[in-house]
Length: 144
Image (cartoon, rainbow, N blue to C red; front, top):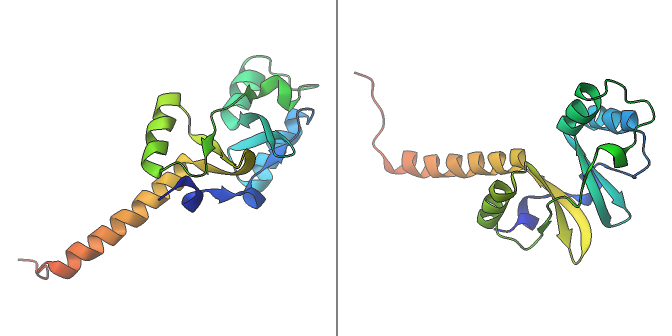
């Protein structure tokens, strides 16, 4: 299974431009119920802003977001992953880079995003399938 199989597609990806006011970025997160916004120029990734970035770089540091833009807060050149990367390799790469989100690149272009939440849902689905196999092959449970 590859990242392409589990990634949220580009049409579900929340993006903004470098000059987007940070309050607007935060509002996008609220409206779309996401924890990050990819800062993009067309299909090119400039950076990523997370809810944690806003909390630490805006609220905790200055307390004043007036005049701040996505460029002021974003992590530039974020970790990205190729759409053909295997899911197991993705686990290792995300751990190695210490990230919870990874924009997806397909053919050199931004094509979606995968998050730790997506991976947890995938694992839960797989565990459910395994438990169904065990249930089908095990004797019925009868309480004492």
